[in-house]
Length: 353
Image (cartoon, rainbow, N blue to C red; front, side):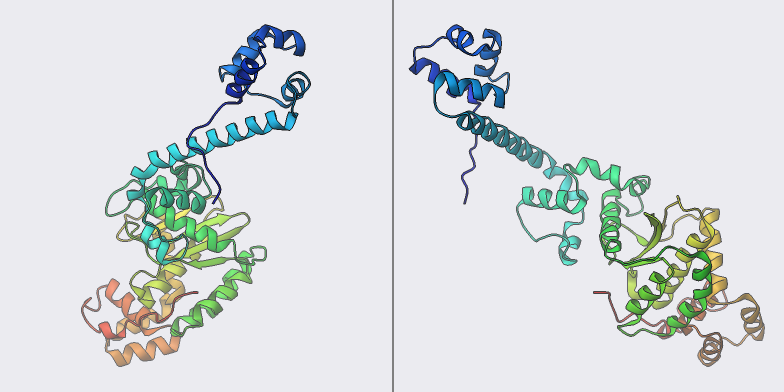
C-alpha cells in the first residue's frame, strides 16, 4: 500500500533548509537566480508555488536536479488536494441519509461498505460529481419536485440517475414518431404475456423506432411509477414496476408513450403515486386508456353490464389485451368494486437483467 502523508509539506520548507545548510541568504539566492527576494520569501512561507522555471534556476545554484524540486511541489499539490478531498468527504457524510444507498447496493450500482466516507466517495462516482451538492444540478427535474408525500428529491435523483446509466447501454436508431404510432398495436399484444422474455422483446421493439426503455426497481422515498425524458435525440421511458402488477405496468408504459407522441421534446415527465394531475397528465392518461382499450368496443361491452370474469376474459381476448387491464379500467370507471376479482390482476414474474 502506498504511503499517504497526513500533512502537506510545502517545498519552501526544503528550500529554507537547503539555504541554512549552505549558509546562503535569500538575498544571495536572489542575486544568483534573478528571482526577487519577495518571491523567494513567498515560496519559503508557502505563499507561492515552486514552478518548473524556478526549479531549473535552483538546479544551477543549489545543485541537485530540477526534478527534485519539481517532485517536491508535485507531491505537495497532490497531498494538499487529497487532504482537501478528505475534508469534503467528511463534511458530506451528513448528506448520506438522504440517498437510498441500500437500494443502489441491491441493484449493484455501488459497492457495499459500512464506512461513511467510502459511501460518499461511491456516490460521487455513481453520479459523476465531485460533491453531492452538485446532484441538484444534473438531476434538476427531480429537485423541482418538492419533498413531501413520502418523496425525497435525492432519492428520486438517484432513481433517475440509474435510468440514465441504463439508457446509455441501449443501441437506438433515430426516433421516428410515425413508426412508433404504427407499432402501438403490436405493443398492446405483448400485454398478454408475463414470461421472462417480454421485457427484452418490448425493449427491442421500441428501440427499432428510436424509443429507449429501461426498468429500475422502485426505490424508497420515490413514490414513482415512471418517467419520460429526452436523452440526446431519443426519448427514454423509465419504469419502476412498483408492486409488479401487470396492468399498472402496461398503463404506465402507454401513459409515457402518450407523452412522447403528443408532447414536446424539451419536456420531462415523472408519474407519482396518487399525484395531482395537470392537463398533460390527464391527456396522457386518456391516451393510455383509449390505446389499450378502444372506446367503441369498450362502450359496447359496458352496455351489456356483464362484468363477470368470463365476460372480461372474452372481451380481453377480442381486443388482445391482458384481462387485468380490462378489469383495472372497469374498477377505475366504477363498474366493479376494487376488492373484486383481484386474482385476475396478473403479476409480472420477470425483472430485466
